[in-house]
Image (cartoon, rainbow, N blue to C red):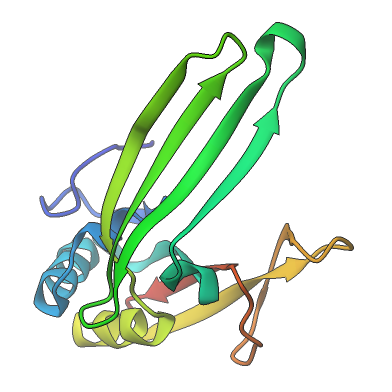
Length: 173
């Protein structure tokens, strides 16, 4: 059974909680993130897992625009990811996604994200403080073009890159 719930509200214990699309980055203070993780832990079965996607790299702290065009003919559109600002004092950043359609119409800032850019180490420390006993990093591997290929392998040592993706898996036991 799949349940879509706010993790800050305790649910019937479940096997798996996925905090994806960097949703937990809305919590900008350490105590807020720990509270979130504690509540998630309460909503997991004894052997349940919390899965978090993580992103980082040098481009997560640089203001930049990344554009990609998708589709063909009338279905063609341009996707634009903007990293609009970053404050290195508190690790807060503002990001947005815009779309430009073939007919010239632009959906500016269709999605906006006002986030704290959390590091893997900070997240793991908060998980531990929230009572999770273990956490493992699964790092996305590079494909032949040097970009991520969607294959994640468990590791503890990597090299930084402009952008990286990882999955963090935490267990109660």
